[in-house]
Image (tube, rainbow, N blue to C red):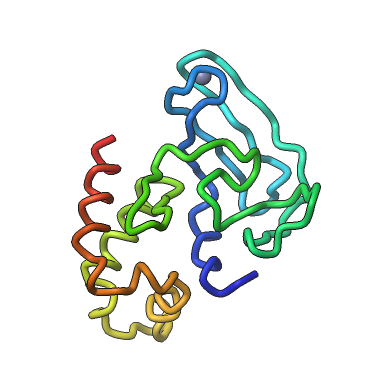
Length: 157
Ligand SMILES: [Zn+2]
């Protein structure tokens, strides 16, 4: 998987999506120990679906293979079923997306520099290495205001 997508795999255990049936907010829960236990449920219309994929293999969008049934990150759909994400918007001609509120929070903290100021802990520079995997357009200071405005919009969605 490409480095810039690797951080995404930390947020794929609970994903907020648009229900493909009623378009309202629905959720996908996945077991990180066994991706074959991944389930979509919509509390609004009662839809549900079990994921039938290929276990714990994770691919980025740029390594997409036709017909591949694995976990798919790096594109603004959920990595299992390909449903559209609840938290997605266009910012600076790029697609800003988050799998859930924790992910959105992470992006906001990153863009506002909070994570970059953290000190190393007993585990070393774990956050530092996480940041270095983010896409470059997110790192750009000139995009900051636009991206933060979009993140705020999405958080209140
Ligand atoms: Zn629904």
